Image (cartoon, rainbow, N blue to C red):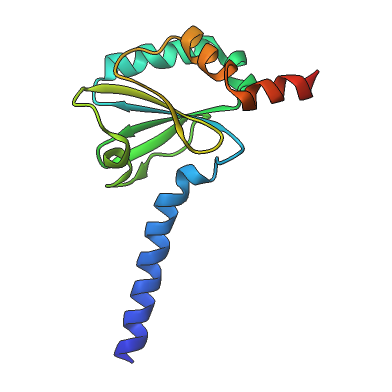
Length: 141
């Protein structure tokens, strides 16, 4: 009976850990993901205003935006509930700065990492220069 209970606990823990790891992998080959790692609310708000002002361009490029903080994360475009995670912030945090923006491509690779405000012009130019984006534009026409 003890073994069965122990196996049950392991299964629950494994499912919980896997769900945290898969939160971003669900976007693989579907969406480009922007991660905003921010401990500075003013910088985060400025970045979000820029993204919301360019909603059409964000949508055309299949962009999803997450805000990662120590211990939690939230998909902010489109908006979802705050989730708890002790590892997601640490997994992506590299710079010793209060603000960082990371672009993850359709293939799951990091395409851009910046320690300050990311203009939509630079973001869109970076994405539009990618081969996958060129194919999307050709297929759309």
